[in-house]
Amino acid sequence: MTVNNNLKLCVINGYPKPNRDVLGQAGMKQAHEMYVDFFNEYTPNAKIDTLYIADLDTVLPSGAQLDSYDAYIWTGSNLTIYHADDARVTRQIEFCRAIYGAGKPQFGSCWGVQMAAMAAGGTVEKNPKGREWMFARDIHLTDAGKAHPLYKGKPAQFNGFIMHLDIVTKIPAGGTLLASNAHSLVQSLEVKHDKGTFWATQYHPEYNLYEMARLLIARKQPLTDEGFFKATDEVETLSANLIELYKNPESKQLRELLKIGDDILGKPIRQQELRNWVDYLVLPSLQL
Image 1 (cartoon, rainbow, N blue to C red):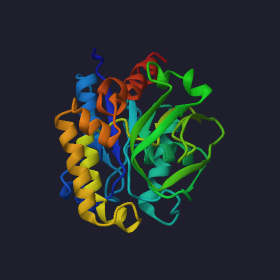
Image 2 (spheres, one colour):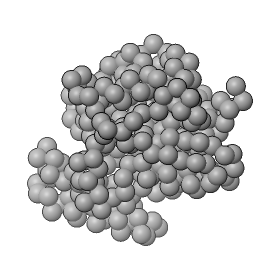
Image 3 (spheres, rainbow, N blue to C red):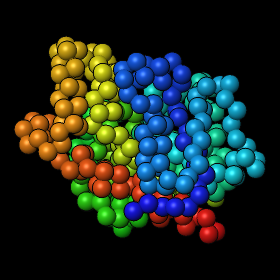
Image 4 (cartoon, rainbow, N blue to C red):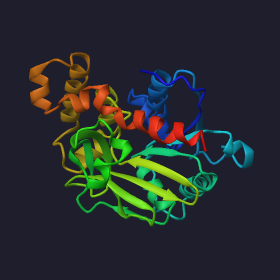
């Protein structure tokens, strides 16, 4: 199934250029490209623009140009959202507030859920439990999440791709907790603020095994320094196993070794939130 509407979408890449270069050198796609891949498949008639918002010379849409997009999507970022003296961060929060004010639907993962909360008056802090990486295990829907259209057709418990140090610690007024796990209380939110609605996840429904494998390579030194591995070559071995399973998803041996099921391997489960956002938030908003 595809959506044939001529949507105009803006994907907001939250990474500064030096860090985009790091990801590229590790052999992974840029954060916005994973979203573009999804929309090219599910909404093939959509016009998709990319906004490199952390580059201070990037001119941000305003007025009629801001309003010309049907919806906005936020990628992850390696910035820290509570660094109030960093213009690369503050301009993003201000722009998110402008989108809320324009009443346009938003979606985001990782940095996106932190942005959804922060721009609406919530708070974000470093997770005292440390980094959550590779997989967010045993994400479970709250009662509100079970009834929410973001999770229509999604299992009540699942795993998801993840890599983050910070968490939402205060849900803003107008926010609803939709999913959680033992490591991070806020795994997803709906935030209604000003005129707009933002659906967001801490985990990454846009990722796949290959891209996570390459992200591990990009982060192999911090992962080792933080004690998850004894040496960086262990990260490389894990990355290689993920790529092998990506190529051979029916391998029972690798599935068992990595503790990976269809919620990670299969687009029908993994990407359900993205399809639901289009179907139940973006398309209805066009009728308003």
